[in-house]
Amino acid sequence: MALLARGGTPSVADVAAAADVSRRTIYMYFPTFDQLLIDATVGAISAAAVDRAIDAGDAGTGVEERVERMVRAMHRVPPEVERLGRTLIRLTVEDDGRGAGQTRPRRGYRRVEWIESALAPWRDRMDPALWRRLVAAIAMIVGWEALIVQRDVCGLTASEGEELSVWAARTFLRAALREARS
Image (cartoon, rainbow, N blue to C red; front, side):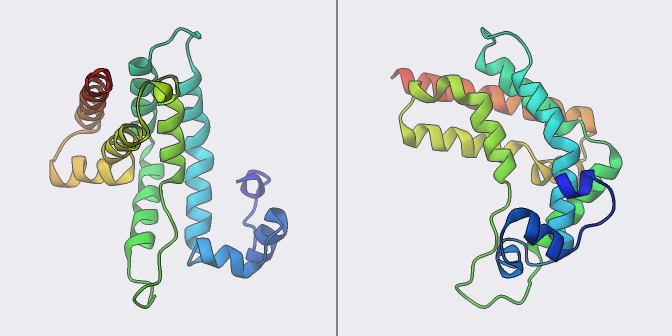
């Protein structure tokens, strides 16, 4: 993301040098250089807005409000960023010729980090299994995949999809808190 911010399109060698890794290591995480560039571009465009949304407010801000702001920030993407997100999904789900037993690079790492950050004040309130389940449940209702289902499968508008994700996040949060108390 730092290389893109400087302008121009970096090469694989540029990225490897900046990350202090080999070119081979880059291809272990990103099967194509296009995927790396799109992932970095989407990250550069959306990361600051989501980080600000999670951190907004005072120290007494509740988890529900933190999660709602994160969900809304993840939904409010310009059309060109949505197109990049859809391209990233296509690049990461298409068959890339890997044989059986070979794993794909992990996607969604930023999403999980954002969710964990928004939920951080509750981490000590629940056991590790409930924590993982809550993070995974929220991960299902935000991000590119959720946006695609909301728009393409359910026919929702952007604002309807955003409200649905906020409602689902609140529902998961309240259910997890009830379970943690019992």
